[in-house]
Amino acid sequence: MDTSESSTEPQEKDPSPVPPHRRGWRRWAMDTRPLRRPAYRRLWSSTIVTAVGSQLTAVAVPKQIYDITGSSAWVGAASVAGLLPLVVFALWGGAIADSMDRRKLLLITNSGIAVTSVLFWLQAVTGLDSVAVLMVLLAVQQAFWGINAPARNASIARLVPAGELPAANALGSTVMQTGQVVGPLLAGVLIPVIGLAELYLIDALALCVTVWAVVRLPALPPVKAAAERRAGVREIAEGFRYIALHKVLLLSFLADIIAMVFGMPRALFPQLSSQTYASYGEGLALGLLFAAIPIGAVAGGLFSGTFSRARRHGWMVIGAVAAWGAAITGFGLSGSLWLAVVFLALAGVADMVSMVFRGAILLSAASDEMRGRMQGVFTVVVAGGPRLADVLHGTAGSAFGPRAATVGGGLLVVVLMLALAAAVPALRRYRV
Image 1 (cartoon, rainbow, N blue to C red):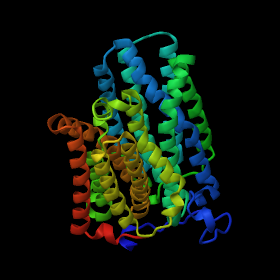
Image 2: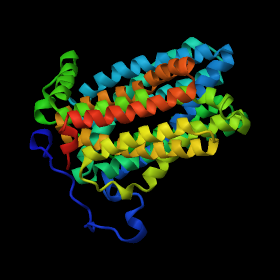
Image 3: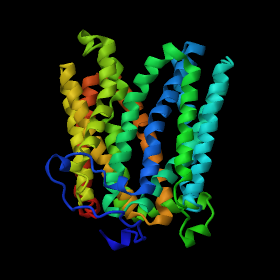
Image 4: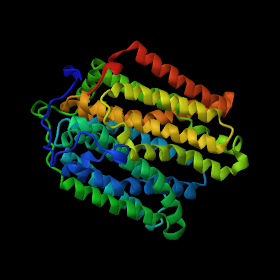
């Protein structure tokens, strides 16, 4: 790893020696080395409950808005209402995370998210039926989340050594992807039984577990230089200048933008399920298409031992993004629903590998006083890329047909990623 793009902070001492190589089936299974570290284990365990709980609210809010208005347009408007504060506060939150104790910031923001969930529950249980109130609460919740995510992700590099960052990212991403599969399914089962209000309450209770876990984390104060810095527009701009000066960071963001903007065809799933795969049953086809990528990502996480020890992080990102594009191309060419699901699941595996190593690069190639701002930009890219893809693929699907738009997008991902890797060698050369 280039010394100019790395940090050399003291790491928590290993609680027990770990053999360099695992034997038998264990070398293929999930790499759990970071869980040997109590602080990381507390941070990670808090996400197990909240990953599912947050998805309950993610389902309940659009369902309640649709019940009140009977309009999908209002559901879409609510999504936009949540996106703007997420983007603004993620950038600002990254600067805050670089200038104050990250544990304290996590306590404040997790408590804020929990209070917001309680307010969601109160408006539902009292029968307020106000779309305006729902949208305001959603905007406030996303603002808290925007500040929380950079601090949470930036803290990982202080809790595990650099060599275990890919494994730590795989553990966290697997839990979140599992929540995206289990949460909506659980919400669908629970809504007819207990109602929407109780879903909000379950999420609020789950967030209390997160607050308790954060209380038990060690203090995570900023480095001395960062402690004297404010969290304003100038500091946010410094983050973008830092990205521009460190090519490997810039390329990691560009790799994600290429994959998500040109290669995420989820906006075409409804059309494909009603036309191309209608013979399988429109409802079944739609559910399988939406579930396939997260299921593949979970599978990739469960077998992360196959790749988490790789040291050439740059090549892993390049290969994963190209594999994502190839799998999406295969999906677009599939006439069979089951073959399409297989290709989407393979894309999910590739996406997991990409997430793991892009996250590791952001944590290892940036110095600690800049990690919060890097994670803030990362949060914006992750949130904004798929939404831009929805617009792009929706437009292309209407003009050229959904299959042509999907195939074209997948091929474009492969071409652009390989061209970027060939033109700028910084990502190819990066290793830990």
